[in-house]
Length: 379
Ligand code: PMP
Ligand code: GLN
Image 1 (cartoon, protein in one colour):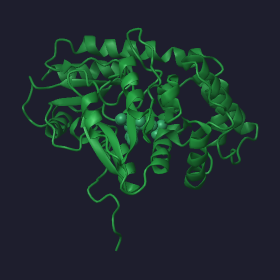
Image 2 (cartoon, helix red, strand yellow):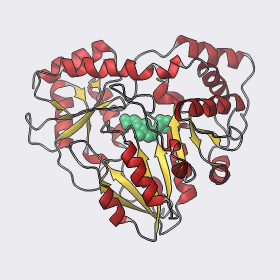
Image 3 (cartoon, rainbow, N blue to C red):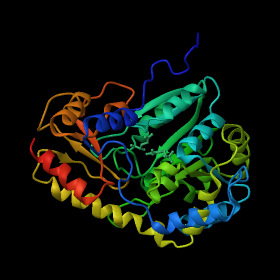
Image 4 (tube, rainbow, N blue to C red):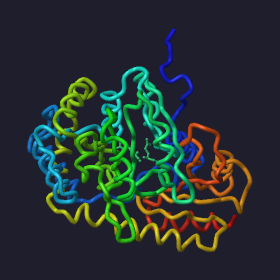
C-alpha cells in the first residue's frame, strides 16, 4: 500500500484537455504549445552536433558553451552578472528547475507564498517536500499583487515567495513597484524567491521584461528560472535553466545531479549556437504580439470579452455573456458543441472559483486561430 504524497491531486488540466481535444478532434487552444514549425536553422544545428559526435552525457551543470551564452544574454538584457561556471545550471525544462529549487528551499513545516491563479506545478512541489502553500489571490481586473496581504501572510515559517512574470495564465507582468515591495519584504528576512520567467521573451506593447535578477537585493536570494521551450517554440525538447548565486547553485546542483544528472547534449550545443544571433530571442515578442492582436481582432464581435494580456502566449476570455455555467462545464461544453478546447481557470486556484474565465493559447497558425474564432463567434 502506497501512502500518497499528493492525495488530492489528479491529472494536470493540460494533459486532460489536450487528451480530450485529440479524442474529440477539436481545435486545441488549451495546452500552451506552438503548432507551427520551428526554425530550420535550429534543427540543422541539432543534426550537426549529433553527427559531430556530441551524443554522450553532458557535464552535470550543462554544456559550458550554453551556460556562457545564457550568462551573457542575462548580462546584456538585465545588466547583472551570473558566472557561467558557478551560477548557471541547465535543466530539463523549467519544470525540473522549479521542482529542484523548491526542494532546495522547502523543509517540512516551511511556508511558501503562491499567488493565484498559479501555474500548476508550484503547490505540489511544495507539498511533496512537506511544505505548506500559502495562497494569495491576485487582484482583478489586472491581476496585480496585493502587497498588504503578502505582508500579513509572512510568518516565522515563511521560506519562499514564488513570482511568475509574465504570468501564466493571466498575461500580467510585474512592475518596478512590485520589485520595490518584494525587496522590502525579503531584505532582512530569511525568505527566498523563485522567479519563474519562462515567458521573459514574450512581452507586449513596447514594454520590457523586468527580471528579478535586476535587483541586487533580490538576486542574492533568488533562483531565476527560464525555458528555451517558450522562446524557441520547442516545448517538446524540455530544456531550461536556473540562474542563482553560487551558494544557492551549490545546493541546487546537489539535488540536480541525483534528479537528472545532465540534460540532452546535442540540443544544448544547438541552443548555444542559436543564441549567438540575438534576433532569435529579441524578435519573439513582436511575433507573438501580432498573433495576439490577430486573434483579438477576429473575436472582437463575439460575446467573449478579452482581458488585457501584457505577455505570454495566453489570453483570458470572459464568457459571462454566453453562459452562467462554471468554467469546467463551460470548457467541456465548448469541446462538445463547437470543437474548440480551452483551459478553465479554476484549476489554477486552490479554492472554489467562479470568475467565468477561460484561457486560450494563441501560439497557433493564423488559419487555426481564424477557424477557432469563427466557431467561437457562433456562441
Ligand atoms: N512555468 C510556467 C509559468 C509555464 O507556463 C511553463 C510551461 N509549461 C513552465 C513553467 C514549464 O516549462 P517547461 O516546459 O520548460 O518545463
Ligand atoms: N505551460 C503549458 C500551459 O500552461 C503546459 C505545460 C504542461 O503541459 N505541463 O499550458
